[in-house]
Amino acid sequence: MIEFRQVSKYFGTVRALDNFQAQLASGRVIGLFGPNGAGKSTTLKMIAGLNRPSRGEVLVDGLNHWMTRDRVAYLPEVDHLYPWMTVGKAAEFISTFYSDWDHTKYHDLLNYLNLNEAMKIGKISKGQRAKVKLLLTLSRRSSYLLLDEPLSGIDLLTREEIINSVIRDYREGEQTVIISTHEIGEVERLVDEVIFIRNGKTVLSGNAEDLREEKNMSLVEIMKEVMRDAR
Image (cartoon, rainbow, N blue to C red):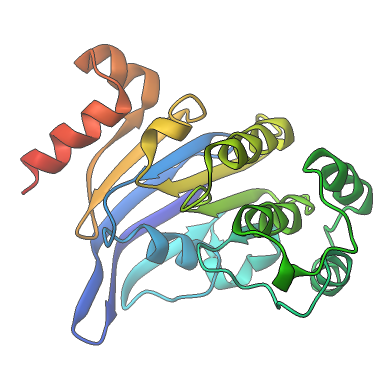
């Protein structure tokens, strides 16, 4: 389980999280939904141990979040790949940092995503780079998988491949997947639980199916409603 206990985060005078509280259950697919600038990326970076709270506490399996980085696989929104590397060299480089790197899984995903190790990252399309980022993240056998805007700026066919790869890789009950996005319609069918966030605060959370039945709305419609009411 991941817990945020009254977490605030400041970057200078900018407040990214404001007394944020949440409990993210293990073994589920969780959607972290909200508009741009809501605090979604900051939330994921804290779970990944890349940021520390200005106030409050973040716990992963009861431990301080910077002590559990080896349990967390994080796919950032920004393109962090070195353009001069080939896919194979990037995988070799990343694999040295993580004891849970799975070479069999890597080669399986390489074929599934229609990539090859000789591709030079600086010379492939944006969609292919998105798939490489996913490949390097999913090739670990981590307990927690964090995906920050994995579909941003990607064409429809590549989006479908990415979504299908996440579904294919997910180990129900064993792995927690947190998808941060403002493009809810693309991932609505994936998520078990949802947290809607605005201005660094939770405005609504709960079981996705229960919320749909209670409000007789899609998650996209629910987000529009709760964001409008939160203004």
